[in-house]
Image 1: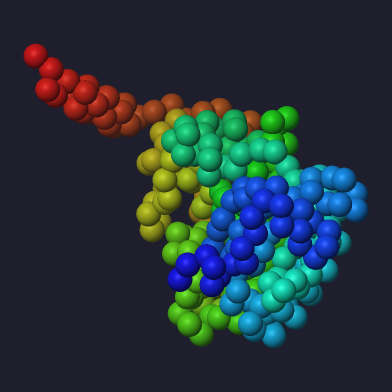
Image 2 (image 1 turned 30 degrees about the horizontal axis):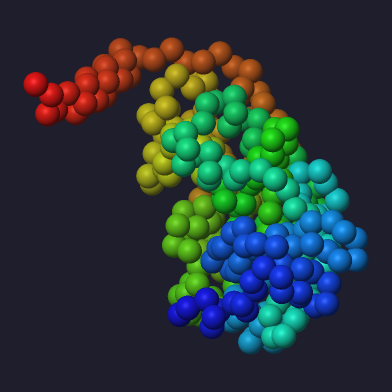
Length: 297
């Protein structure tokens, strides 16, 4: 299905709802497109996100969208992107939010492959701090490297709070419209019945991100982080296991507890690589030399 059926044609210069002048498209995801727009009422630049047409055609989804945006507007934390306005315009649901200039964690992973331990801890602690505030009101349910922005000053912003709940209306379609890659970040209970999850589903997602940011890839089933990243503090495996426990009751009780445990982990001395770890690292280094030397005379 082409964009013309899924999204409105919003070229530069189009004015949405007699207020928001489209400047350019800045992103596209599974739920919709994002544009940079000028708010004619305030003179400020905002990010305007249009949602997939399937949401506008479903009255329950429209009602849920309005409810979730109202909840998200109550979030007042420096680590959460502020939502300003939400409407239905010419059959399309859209909302406007704070425009922040930064790069997603996904961008940094693509550019660098993986992040160092200090950067990972810092980013996830800031995310957990924002979640601690948000969980008093709502849950995210779609945490991933795509939804965490890192700004130039090193601060972090979370995007798209509560919008994953819109897909509850379409769960009977075997997760049609859900990016299969996002399933890796979903807690087991969320895959079974997303409508009944609590805040600990977000903590599971953070545990998966912890592994991916350090290893540069998603974890295999029951894989220990110490195998993928030798040299981490001794309790890294325990942290990972608790964050991603299959039973929600076995996970951290709150975002604050996860953050505090992550900080304690950061202060621990790094584990010295075992002889087997050193051999694996050397073997990988030699394989790289061999591949790099192929074809040379």
